[in-house]
Image (cartoon, rainbow, N blue to C red; front, side, top):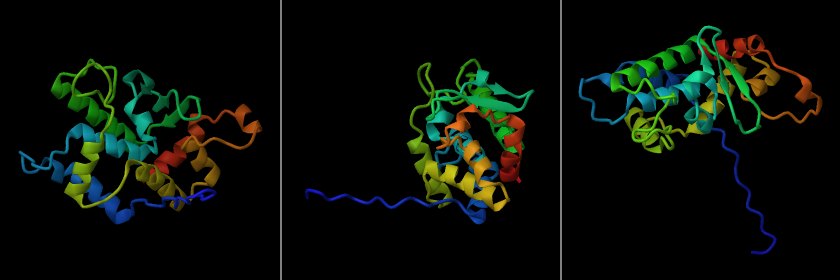
Amino acid sequence: QKGYKRTVKRRTRFLDDDEIAKLIHFDLTVKDWPETPTHGVTDQGMNFTMLLLYSGLRKSEGLRMRWQDINLTKKHLVVHDTKNKTDHYIPLSRLITGTLTRQKAYLERLGKEASPWVFPAVRGEGHMTEPKSQLKKITEATGIKFAFHDLRRTFATHAEANGVTFELIRRALNHKSRSVTEGYIITQIDTLRPVFDAVAD
């Protein structure tokens, strides 16, 4: 119909405390028990999911992450080629560090420790491209229905619940500012570190 404009309802889904507890319990306990799990969830699929939850990264940013962009000594990682066309620095909370350490150990068990990608593809030299099948298996195994972008929304919601200001949350998520002068302000990693530590807590 001419002149008709469809209104899309803004999604507001995020995981509450009980759902997060259930997801972490599955990740750390249920996933590997019994010794021959039938749910089909891989360590990489779970590590990718938990990284998005703990960091607020976009799915595409997590998929393209390289080991060379992670500095465990200075406790931060950098995301290149973001939606805003800027480099985005993220402090490593204890949960992000733990997840990355588990992913590295997983790749070593597979003999893929030489891959430059944090989440390499099953076949070929590239990175994992579409973890949709893993997400489906995770939601079926846990009974928690969510999309990857819901994890980003969960990160922001729990940061706010822990008293983090809207401005810091916006910077932590690398949302584009409407302020022209914002482009001249460099956010130091240590300024954002409390955001990620609050979410971890």
